[in-house]
Image (tube, rainbow, N blue to C red; front, side, top):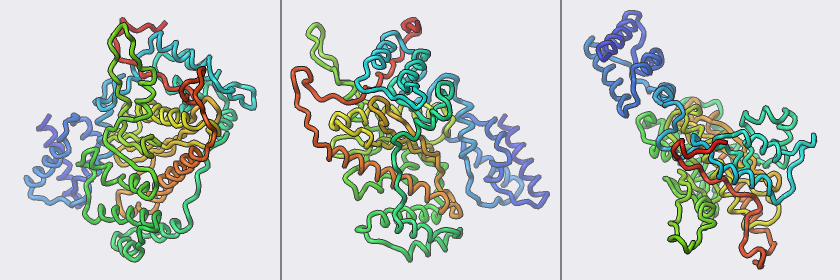
Length: 461
């Protein structure tokens, strides 16, 4: 296989040379993508190996290759999907979406749906949303976001249960209001419109600088400057770790919150909200020793105010939106983390839950997807998905790709500020009583994540 690979590379190089075409490793990856995928395993250094083989072939024939940035994105995604076994999740994802629910877990979900505290959501057609979701849940043998009363707007499963008009009503009812960018931010960003040359972009940036007291303008200006620096120094995103990519490409998400009362922490942190939910009923049993405190869900990004979570995010290096890791984290793990945050915050707020909106971020290499969770009625958490949106990797993409990213991140910060204000402005007093000794959330909690177990221990009846 190694010899055949060398022969194919040499054949490609000589064909390009004989026809007078430029020879570059970047073009080879594009022209021979399927060949590279078929002859590559998922070992960590395969990018260097292919580059070395290409260089050896050039040296053998005394040829020089044109230096161009190699784009591995599509190849990496295909390699990851090729090597991913059916029905398994990526090792970095701890979610158990592939574990069947047992009778106890199904009983938990059934009890939640049949003992809801708040009035149910009746659509214009008189269809009850919670009852329809319950019908779907009864047929599920594996965990789904609806087991935690989360209605994912883009989940295709609902096409069977709701008409297009009903889905539109569910989407628009008390929907979050995303504010437009301030005029001054638009005017600054528009200075880069139609400009595709790096030096001209740098000149525009150098001529328009702002003081940190102009918080949003300063943040956008710094973001543009950081990206231009990546272009100038030819930062190679393909040979970097997950932490490298998040820090260098997506660091502007964290910096957006610098001027606010929120702070962002990253790197496999335990969600306080998740920990509160998991350990809510922990006590001294007496008959047996007290159980150890369970660790909450770990997420890659947490947005916090004081001790409470207000947002979360997950990050992955590659694989794209079709990988098992992305599907599991974007459609189950992150939604449950956002539901935990919402559930926890609603212990402090007793009215107007519609004013709460919790953002989540999914970083998949050079793409960003935003999730927004709100409570349109008293029981259901609704989930919106915005994106994915690509990062501007080259100068001629800067304007058209950075504007959507800047806009959505700024809007997420604005929504969180409004959420915090809504909580602080709630003057309702909750006094513990004999019947209600502790504050409880106004919405049901998530289903506990099913534990991996032997097939013989699973009751799917």
